Length: 452
Ligand code: PLP
Image (cartoon, rainbow, N blue to C red; front, top):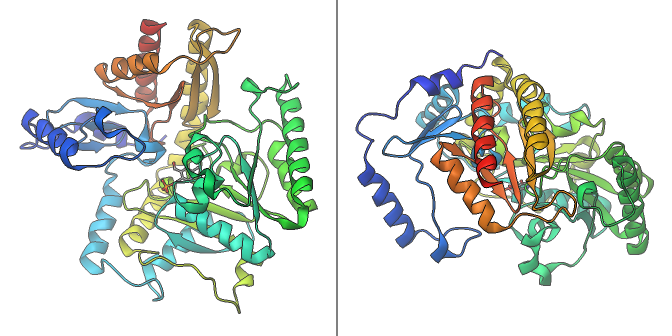
């Protein structure tokens, strides 16, 4: 679909002079001795060395290559080392590498304009942050100030980032160490495959979850709820594509009680689902949109909040009490402009849709049919989860030891997977070619057959 980064990756070896197993050993030694890793017990780490990458491929110093089916935390939508984005960062670095947020800067203005060109009508400005968590922090703050209310309702199965309000809003296990800070946040949400309620169809699960949401809001007191914060498609928690009518139902409930709807598009936005925003597939428009990752594929840390006009005007004559030294950083802004241009020019979002429709959806359906470990596959575009179970009838999740064997088997075959709990997430870059997608699926199929 007009994307050539896969071909470049196949033809480009790692740079000469960088190929050395010694460098891999040094990287591992320095990492073990001096780098403190997130979400990990430090004594049990076994990290992969990544020294370089291009398109959908990464490699270590010795030249061992891996097809990147993780997109580095579901992030590199335009693939590794896109030449136009790298050049834009270099060009910006030669001109201006830092500037305070309160200044006017042409690159920042262009980045905001480009982001808004993909948002629905009625969105008028962009508040820049350094990543996804602080985007959600600030969106929650905006919602609280706009409504004069405190409470936030978010989903049980969600991840919104690892800072104060964002990790409290997060519904999955990551919030547990932060329970002490849970004031003013309440959880709900659908998940048909593991529904503990009476629902047996997606429509029933949608109805059940909406009913529960409305009861939560009524119990909390509707006039105390500032916002409903949702990932349009919860990603880390399992690519939980919302059931029919669900998001429209949430929007209707929010409107009924004067509550704002914040859609977290940090993982799902900017091409991953085969649309610019994931909510474009669901006929729903939020009040605030948070983004990061895919907006510039993480080449320079960046994120932000897209504000609809009524919320933006709240702050016309009133100070917004929030800001970050690196907000709207020139290198980040240059990379956003170039990344969004490349995505449009090279039809990268369309490529993600086509790969999902023509390769991943049918390939994963076949895998589900043939492999007894597969309980369910869910997703769209280049955003899929394969949920693995010991027994298809009881749906008991497979254990960590089996997931460890899957990881080892995939890496041994040159496939870098994204694993979460009992799931393999199939999340290659949006630029993945049909050949690469089919190759990766083939390798995954082999590994799962081996461990089944
Ligand atoms: N929101 C969602 C949906 C995410 O998936 C993530 C990260 O994975 C975040 C927020 C947090 O983003 P960051 O890690 O850039 O702070």
